[in-house]
Length: 419
Ligand code: C5P
Image 1: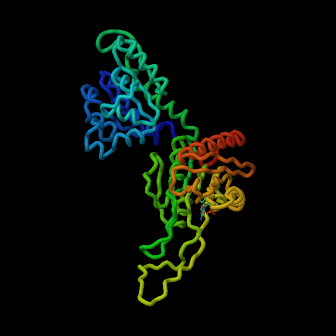
Image 2: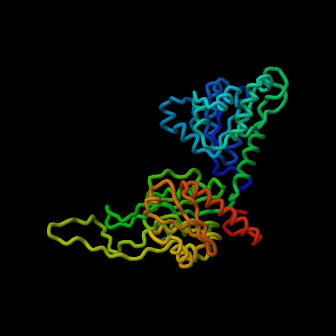
Image 3: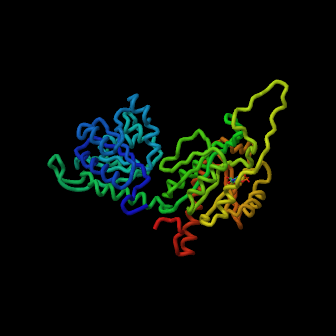
C-alpha cells in the first residue's frame, strides 16, 4: 500500500440515488479511482434524473447498472454478484426513500434489491431537505439502519439547493473519500504484508490427455486467500485446476503440476505469510507419454513408474527467504493430530491445520464445512466444525495476532513488507 493509492485492490460499490447531490458522486468516483479502488455503480431511476449513466460509466470505467430486470446487466454482472464482489457498499446520495426501503427490507428496484442481498458493510451518505431529515419516520428508519450495522456519514448542515437551511446536505466528496480510506485502514490489519496461498489439486500427466489428480475442490485455500485479502494483505494465490472464481483482488496464478506450483511459488517469494492448502500429488509419472497411449488388443496394460514430487511446503519452510509464518494442512484418514505434529517438525513449518478426512462427519474434500485442529510447536487447538470461510476467518485472526506479536518483539519489519 502506498500513499498515492490508499485503496489499491479495494472494490467499492457506489449506489447513487435521486438527489441534486448526485453531482458530488461524480467527483467521488474520480477520487476513488485515483485512490486505486475499483468502482462499480448503480444509478437509480431518480439518480439518472440528475446525472447521466454515461458520466458515471466514463468515470468509473465500468458499465453502469440501472435496471433489475435488464437482461444485459444481469448477464454481465447479476445483482447478487454486484453486492458480493464489493468490499464496501456506499449509498451516496441516499434519498429518504431509499433509506426507508433499506430499513424495511423492500426490494423493488436494482439498488434496493442489491442492498438487501448484500453481505457487505454498508455506508450511507444521506441527502435531503431538513424537514424530511427531521421527520419522525426518517429518524425511525435511521435508528433501525444503525442497529442493523449501517454506518452514516453526514448529513452536513448548510444551505440546501431548495433554498432552505438546516441539516440534510450530503457531505463533500473529499469527506466521503476520507471516510472510505479510514474504513479500509482500520479493517486492514495485514495491509503491507505479502501472502502466498496454494490451493486446489495438482494434475500429473500420464499422457497428453490423461492425468492423475485428487478430489481437492480448492474451497478452503480460496477462502483463505479471500480472507487474507479482506484483512488487507497483498495476496497471490497459486492454484491447481478448480471450478471456482478468482477471489476478488487476489492475484491468481493457474498451474497444473506440482513442479509448476513450486516454480510459481518460488517466483512469489519473498513474502511474509505462506499458507499451503493445496493437495499436491506426492508422486508424478516418470514415464509420462508424449502421445496418447493406445489400447491394443491382447497387449498388457501400461506400467506407470512414479517419481517423487518436490514438497512445496518443506521447500518454502527451508527457503533462504523463508516467510515469517509458514502454515500447512494435513488431511489424514487416521490419527490426524499426531501425524500433523510429526509433519510440522519434518517439513519445518510453523503451524499445521490438521483435519481428519473421509469420515461421514467430516468428508472435507468438496464439502463446505471443515473440522480442523490448529497444531503449533507447543499447542493443540481443536476448532468446532465450521464453514470453510469461517475456518479461513479464524485462521486469519490468528495470523493477524501472530504478525502483531512478532513485529512487536522484533520491532522491525520483515524484508517482504512494504515500507
Ligand atoms: O505430506 P502431506 O501431503 O500430508 O502434507 C500436507 C501439507 O504439505 C499441505 O500443506 C500440502 O499443501 C503440503 N504439500 C506440499 N507439497 C507436496 C506435498 C504436500 O506443499 N508435494
